[in-house]
Amino acid sequence: MPHQHDDSAPGRAPHGTAPGAPGEPLRDEVGRGDAELPGTDSSAAPDLSTVWLRVFLDVARHGSFTVAARTLGWTQSAVSRQISALEAALGGSPLFDRLPRGVRLTEAGRVLVPHAEAVVERLRGAGRELAALREAAGGLLRVGAFATADAGLLPRAIAAFRARHPAVRLTRHQDFTPVLLDLLGAGRLDLAVVSTTGRAPLDTYSLHHLLDESLYVAVPAGHPLAAQPSVRLPQLADADWIAGSPRPEGTLLDAALRHGFRPRVAHVVAEWTAKQGFVAAGLGVTLIPALAAESVRPDIALLPVLDEAAPARSVYAATVRGRSLTPAARAFLAALGEAAARIPG
Image (cartoon, rainbow, N blue to C red; front, side, top):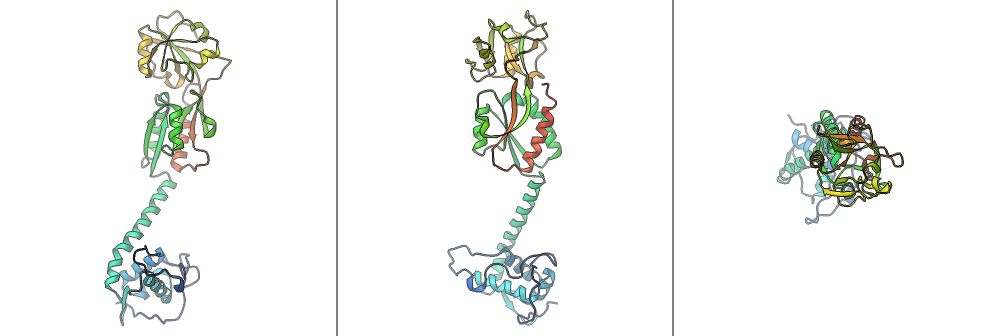
């Protein structure tokens, strides 16, 4: 049976308590004092405390200030003050009829109930989603990578990440390093796997080193150099080259320029699998990075490039400097590191 409401009952809420489980620390009086409550301009959204709404729903649920106060670990007068503050913030209309035994919702109170429930549930939902993000148990992770990283590095990292964090939705975008960096800076990617090829301004980003990548020359199986254990690029100065661009600048063939010759690009082919087909047909030679070496067809030969004058290209996971990483992004970085450790140097 509902308990009798008594606004004049003595006592005040224990200092540092508020709605929630009994004894949960929150303030007795939440928000501003009654004299400072917002006006009654119906065109403006009322300035409400979510604690008021939680107290309102508890009183409505129990039909009693006394039972609600006991549930919340408050005094009855503290609950009454929260309801009075809510009523004042909403223009002064009473939300409850104060009856001899308990309280009953007024028409205004019945109108407010679904709105208060929606607000409280949205806040609970936000709390659940934020908790999931903290635990990398939900949310969205947007990853970008250049083409050859998709040959072995990205699939391994994604497989490991999904096994550990199946509830995180992961999207992947493939492009050239400069484009990936632009997308990263614009906030359209959370993380991008990039390389030092292309002379992109990597120094303006936070870089997480993944590997230093060896280069190979792919030649037809019957090529005179096919049986050699390694090759120097000047040995192929007169060869026809298959490349993704007619100009070597900003591509893997930059290495040839450092050795004093300009490679003759006979065929411009974008895809790595198509380049291998041209090589196998005897139409030229091409450079293959270590990330793509595992997927080379059997009718061509790979020769490691000896190039002491210049280091192998480096591969990084790039993030925006100064922007906090989500737990999912940190977890994916770890998966990338593990996958990179299995790529031949």
